[in-house]
Amino acid sequence: MRKTYLIIIASLLFPIAVYAAPGLEMIVVCYPGGSVNAKDANGAMSSMLRVVERVGQWQENSFNSLFTAKADECRKQMTEKNPKFAITSLGLYLELRSQHNLVPVVQPKIKGSTTERYRVMVQKDKYKSLADLKGKTLGGTVLEEPAFIGKIVFAGKYDPASFFVLKTSNQAIRALRSLDKGELDAVILNEQQFAGLASLQMKTPLEAVFTSGEIPLMGVVANGATTTAEERARFGKALEGMCTDTEGKKLCELFGVEAFTSVDAAVFEPMVKLWAEGK
Image 1 (cartoon, helix red, strand yellow):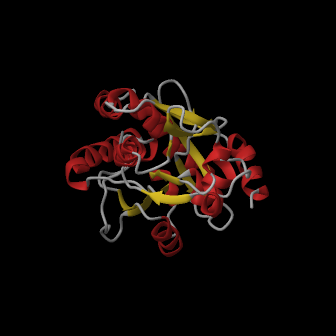
Image 2 (cartoon, rainbow, N blue to C red):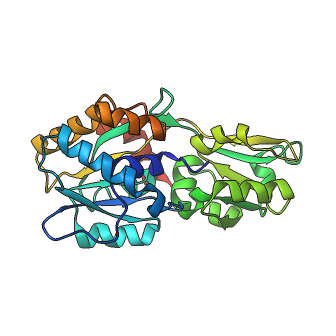
């Protein structure tokens, strides 16, 4: 349940660290609302970073990262560090793209897809539609970014902060357990969290009363003002080669990522339009 795509990307590419040694290229990694065990994951993080450097023919230990699960902290670090490359949620990309000249570099491919859908889950037969949930409690890890949920997931039709009583959680399974007990009226899940439902034993059957349109997965972005097209292409090429690398393939399989694919910014234009139009 915890293998959302942002965890996957953050885990695969960069070691989770609070500080980077002087001289290293800093990568800001933002995973709003998530819960990541840095101690358990750090070995895999470091191994994958070394693969990225080797495949991209950088000197070993060229990169380090700064990780945060808080949207406000991400905004602060993006401003203070002004990184050449970053991993952000789609919501933060849409919000910060103009301010930091963000250019998409690669997307992850998970289970054959570079898109996902969001679903609002309720106890079966308790509510018939999203409209029935007005004033009810809504839980989930993705609620750290309510503007993204309102503008993109709900396509501007509902403002989460005013329509629901929001109960943010840093673990999807915890929110689902609360839903199962009747402590929450609904839980919003991303694609990876929804796929994990089959492995849970719920006392009460659940059903989706809302399913979003297809939303592109966000991956690695670059600052278009501080990187050259050649640098972006080189970095993207290294990421694309990770899952076919002998060592990198093992780590990609471990985290459920099939590949990293290059992406054109045009893929996100429908999302940019929704963001601009959203209230």
